[in-house]
Length: 238
Image (cartoon, rainbow, N blue to C red; front, side, top):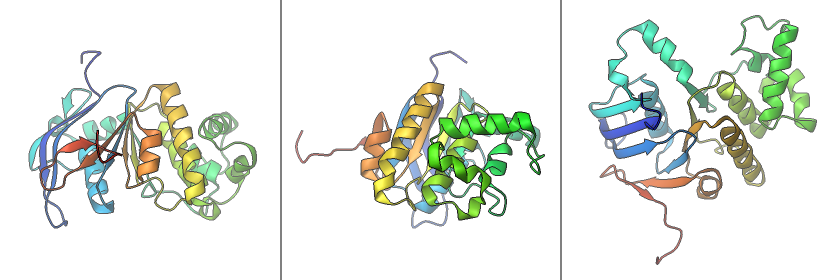
């Protein structure tokens, strides 16, 4: 792959699903270290887009390339599982064991031995937790059940797990849906800081315009009928 190649390329994609009309995406390209927010997708359409980008689902028409490779070219289960290392999923849909501590959940990318978590892994968990904003009082949640954590703490837990293995692309799906409005700006700032430090590309799917504008280099709005992604306009004129 050429070093200048986009991390994500989507061209003329159409995918039927349970919506009133198919998901259409005319064109989207995300460069390395670029953060792009896409608005206009509800929960079902957002899940479908994540599945398309990760190769869980294939488009009915069009092409999706990740790091230059079409998702349709991933032909075996082993190759697909290996390809998942390119992605970090930051979503409430991502499985979190509610009875285990948040720290044990954050250890899972590194080890399946979480009772107890090995000392070396505990150190890695503490580092990535602090990196993702789980510091100060929030760090106390590492030793408490994940199911009891407030939404803004859980989302930072998803962010920490998402970046743990150094993905090329973060897929951030409706991150503020359950988070109180006063806590959203701080989450956006943490995502920006982490993505910038790691130079990780990010696709943020959200309906939260202030959050999108704060977290992304580019904020695009999808026209569901045409599939065109247009820059968000915040003024009537200009």
